[in-house]
Image 1 (cartoon, rainbow, N blue to C red):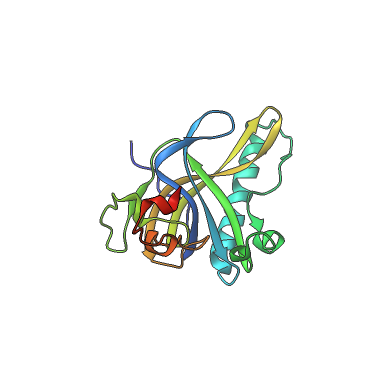
Image 2 (tube, rainbow, N blue to C red):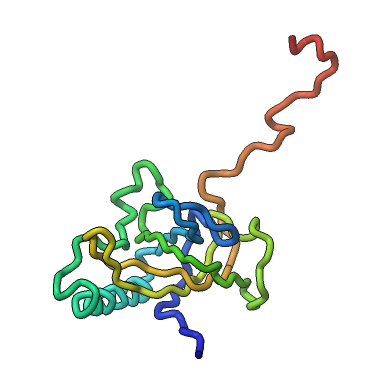
Length: 180
């Protein structure tokens, strides 16, 4: 069987909440690999590709597993400006979460495998390969996006800031009796 190529390859997007090397349990206890991506609103090409893929998956759902019914869930592509009060890095972006049961392929700009999880962090710049699919779970019908592969393109400012070093947090101790 030939491999299925990703339906959408994004342009340069910002990685957030990466769980690409070790799956984590979702709210139903299923182990999933996942990430969120922040798509600059200036990248209209990626946004249009995602909308077209979502529309194709919705049409597939109506013909198939939804039995002619429409979706009941909103798009997973969200407007980051609506959530920028609490997370300023979302301003000027579209955002979405992507999951997979299988570990995604993760490569660098040179297409060499990345094996160190610390190289892919919230804030770095990546391209993502994904596929849209219709789902029907407990009468909730919608379109999700499956995570296939990730290519790191460039480093970026870490989201959430960088923690202080131990030297910045502590002072040298001359006499430990001062600590009691």
